[in-house]
Length: 395
Image 1 (cartoon, one colour):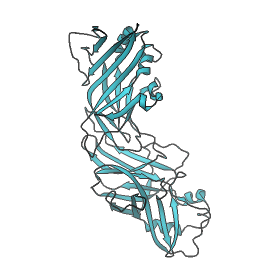
Image 2 (cartoon, one colour; image 1 turned 180 degrees about the vertical axis):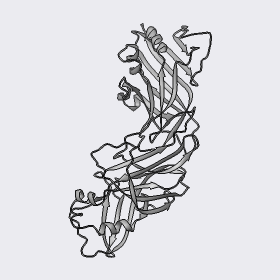
Image 3 (tube, one colour; image 1 turned 180 degrees about the horizontal axis):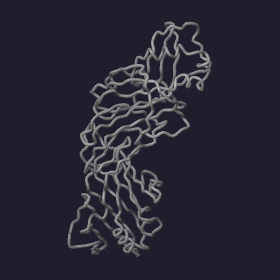
Image 4 (cartoon, helix red, strand yellow; image 1 turned 90 degrees about the vertical axis):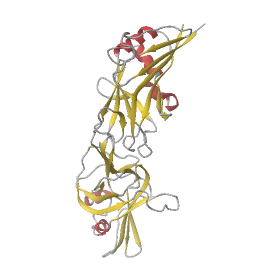
């Protein structure tokens, strides 16, 4: 009859911790049907953790666009702004002879925020100096110049009344841009190809630190530039799925000894697997099926305004430097895990560990990474504790 053994590997890691300086490697002591393996390496922890700067993230045509700038007490200054095209809502636009501007308002539909929304935000809108393209890839550290300031505006996030559908919008008066549209020639208004030569797009950016990063849904039908002319006529420019949109992020990266994952091109957490540990597991578990293996990380020091990621992901780095999901990721979130629960993120790495033990995969560095790094501003701090628990079958 098969015996089911529990192999619990408890790694209390503070980057270079050990529990017993007199024991090197792994000591295995069967106790009934249970085996416990402790981290007892005097030369250092079996797994070491390091915060690594992620210099940029892909940030074009995201579901949300981010705006704001504030000082994080741990991470330093963080900031977000975005550039977007404005598209004609119809072709061959004709405003008639000498159209008179009544009003022009830029509507941006709110989709959430991160930080302290009670502090006022100061922003400006400027025209792009160069074209951007929806079929090109852009990363968050890409500099897009925008020099001609069209409007300045101050506001408190969500300080508006919802519409009949319960949606909130930021409304920015921008008459100068409205008049620029009305002044366009008929050739400029033929179609969006011609119009984007006339108006390459706009950039919305902060002009001072505030307390939050605000999320906008530019694909929402109510996100638009509304132009009212000749008292009652209306024309909209849109920022929907056909428009190029780019998030731009900035970080001071002042983290010192803390262990962290941060969105917006902040930090990943690097996990260095010890070769002696894997070698010992290979000796102990070769040809013994692994029923389950979980890796547990502990979140700490969150606040109500600076909350941790609701979920994070685990990837491996191959020999070319590319980050790839570990095998268990493709089994689905219910199997893989990674959701925050009781201040813990638990990952099922059964298939991945089996591949390491059978040497189907080489020993590679692992990385904890934020999910949705281009569409949220979350950051997560970790303790140095890490647990690897393995259950396997002994024939």
